[in-house]
Length: 249
Image (cartoon, rainbow, N blue to C red):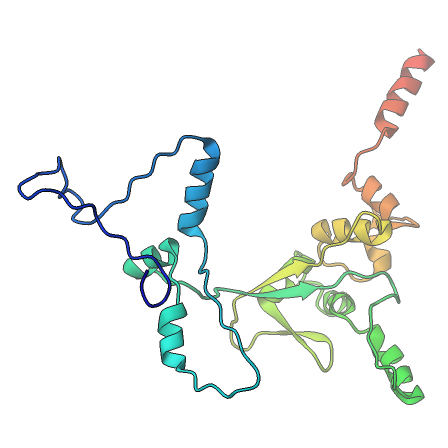
C-alpha cells in the first residue's frame, strides 16, 4: 500500500533470462483475470468504466489548511471514454442548439405562479398577463401574418422567431440563433391537453383554440373529437360502419 492507501501492484519476480512469449507486444503490464461467470464479466466492465471512488469531506472544528491544487490532482478522475475523446481531440462538451420549451394549456387555463405575500393588485395583474403565453402568442402571430406562417408548426416557431419575455410576442430573429422547439410532455391522464398536443404536432398555422378544433369546416366540441375527425386517432367506428353496411344487404 502506498501513501494514499491505494495498492501498488508489482509483477512477480522471474529468473533472469526467462523470455515471456509475446511479452513485449503491448509494451505495458497487463493483468489478466479469468471471467468464469456472466456476473464476473459484468463486474469487470462496470469496474473499468465506473467513476472515481474518492470524495471530499469537511471536518468542522479545527481549521485545516487544505491544498486545493493537490486535492484536485489527487481526486481528478478521467474515464476511459473521456481519455479517448481527449486523445483524438474530440470536444467533450458543448451545445449546438438551444432548446425552447413550448407550453400546452387549454383556453384560459395557463399555469401561473405567485408568492404567498402577493397583494391584490399584483394578483389582478397576474390574471391579466396569465393569458399571454407562447401558445397564445402563436395564435396572434399566425393571425397577423397568415401568408408567412401558412406552413408553420408550433414546434418550428423557435427556429425563426424568439419570444419576448416582456411582451410575450414572437419576433423574427435579427441575428440567427440555432434553436429547437420542444412541446412539453402531457400525460394521457389529462385527455384534453393530450389531444391538444397531438393536434398541435400536425396543425399548421393555428389561429385560435377554436381553429384547432375545426376539421373540414366543422367545429368540434372537444379536442378528442377533432383528433378523431382528423384521423390522428383510431377507434372502432370503421368496423361498426362495416358491420352495419353488411347487415343492410
